[in-house]
Length: 248
View 1: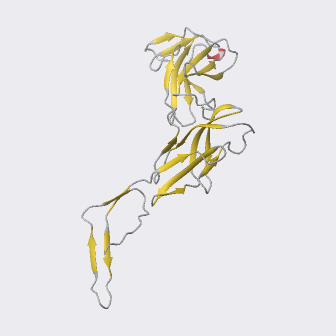
View 2: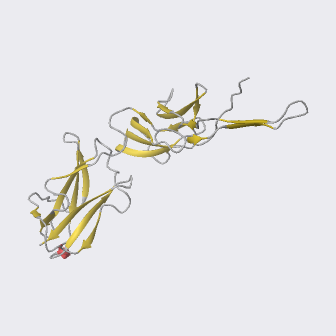
């Protein structure tokens, strides 16, 4: 006789034992498996809805797709405000409608959707380009990467250039980012004069699709003369990138 028992445990390795307490006709019995039973994450799938704009997140149970509710999906969208990266939550049908609540009316499309997965479910992606998650490269000239110290005159504006592996919209920074903090100027270490400056009167972020490159124009403060500062870019995925500056 074979008995199939559904396993509703978190992914991992589990010992398998079975026991029978016995009754008036039969003696008790017990057995343990010689090898552990491996429980893997459940596979997931992202797909466009049958109507409207959004995504549908499902998992397969017994070969049948079942919706995953109350899961967060990162969605790259195009709409009236340009390209934006938003976080949408699936409903009881597994659907997350685009645009999320609070966005202006207009025509929207989904460029990409990414479900990061969790302890129970595997990750999934809808549309392969660009890849899920930021792929930071940089900083590009005129800013040199650590440990080089970039030297410029206090009060000037410097273009800080980098790439995230595709257009992720302009809402890429975490709250209160970018930011800079005063640091002690080192007595040694390579320095490099910033040879390309911006005429912008204030800080701001732009994206160049031809170069696949972001430019954050950092307007420095004249009060920083004869000091050093660390510029910290914190993206909204929590990653941080730093560059060192010395002001004349």
